[in-house]
Image (cartoon, rainbow, N blue to C red; front, side):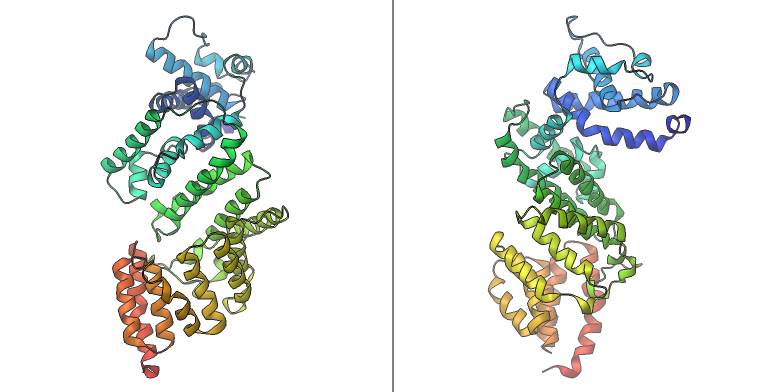
Length: 421
């Protein structure tokens, strides 16, 4: 046990894992996000001081809730009728001193507390950007500076975003009782969307470790959600999708941080553990026979994963899956992605025809002009391709996207000149 007691990595991991349950319980007690956050931070400081000396408690979450609540009560000088808690030294020993106290203070399950916290962060009154920022701050515990760097905004701008989100929550008078079955089903989709938005923020960030770490955090939250909804196939599908996409991370960027296209990736670099876990989770989800958009997207990613090399990709299967996704979730972006598969099956002219009606809807979308430029280039229409690639560069959302187009544009155009017409 002594190795665990003095291992700072173990303590940090325990504090990170306990945060959602502890903060949500404290939020229910005090009904104020700032108070709950401060109480948890104070509990963490006391844990860092006491656990190495006295040993970790049997239930770190309960310990943090009790110590945080006690600290907040002391700070606000609550009346004497509140439950008196023992000093830290007694709570942090290896006995079960915290167990009866937990029962006295709180008879609800951690499950409901975590759901409450996730649902609050995904309140419908908040725009998606505020939902993600609030979840990263409250649920994940990232600092304002870390979140600001991830979203490429100033610390002050992010502080305002989080403050506005908290103010909206307070103004909406969000209930802090355990969410009922109807609310759970209605809000679960919003929670899943928030997690996937968080993942995409990191996934599209290029080789920037500060932003790509958001992928790991999104997967951590998805695993947490999956533990709460173990039989929900769409949550399985969401988790599988992110695992499969994340499995390709080691091959997605070269040594200069530039994007490496799927067809050029060294598949030996793909993470087999993440890939196998994602495929297994997808197979489990599909056995429920309740197809959903996340499951279909995960199936597309799994189809790529199952191909030993790019030339063996089952493009017909991918086309069929995108067609199913178009029916479930009609979107010009889905059609654009399907057009890539169609072009692989029937040639660039077919892909170009499919995306032609999308120009107005996707006039500000980097990938639209990148795809159209690629189709035009394959057809030998070099100057038109050059124009679209230039527009793609202008619309690039990250330096990695722009650098990728710039580094390959001259080479691709040079190769196509003999066939130009």
